[in-house]
Image 1 (cartoon, rainbow, N blue to C red):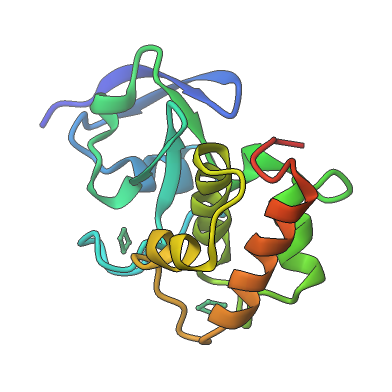
Image 2: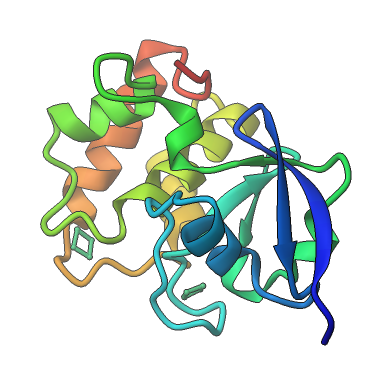
Length: 162
Ligand code: FES
Ligand code: FES
C-alpha cells in the first residue's frame, strides 16, 4: 500500500507521519514516534501489552490501523500519563506497591487501570480483576497490581493524568 502523510494527535501534540495507512498504530508509535513504552506481545489482541487510550478508551494498538486513529482522535500512551518526577497517581501506586517484575506488561496495565478508575472510581476487587483480565503478566505480579489499583482508587484521583 502506498505511503501517506497522516496527522496524529499523540499525548497532546500534533504529529505528522509518513506511513502505510494500514500499518498498526503500535509500530507507528514505537518506530516513527519513538514512544517505546507501548509493547508488542502477541499481535493478536490476546495479551494486552500494546494498549493505549484512544479518545479515553483502551484499545489494542497492535490491531488498529493507524489511519483509523488519524485526524483528530486523541491518542494517549503511557508517556502521556506521567513522567519521571511527575507520575500519575496510578503510576505512583504501581511504584509504591512494586506492581511489576520485569515491567514489560506495566505500561498497558497502567493505561487500562487509568481508564478503569475514570469509569469506576471505586471499583470492587472483582471489578478490577474482570477489567484487567485481558492483560497477561508473565511475572505473575497480579496481587501487587490489584493492590496498586485499589490504592489508587482509595486516593480518589486515580484516573487523572499528572
Ligand atoms: S500485542 Fe496487542 S494484544 Fe498482544
Ligand atoms: S511485570 Fe513482567 S510481564 Fe508483567
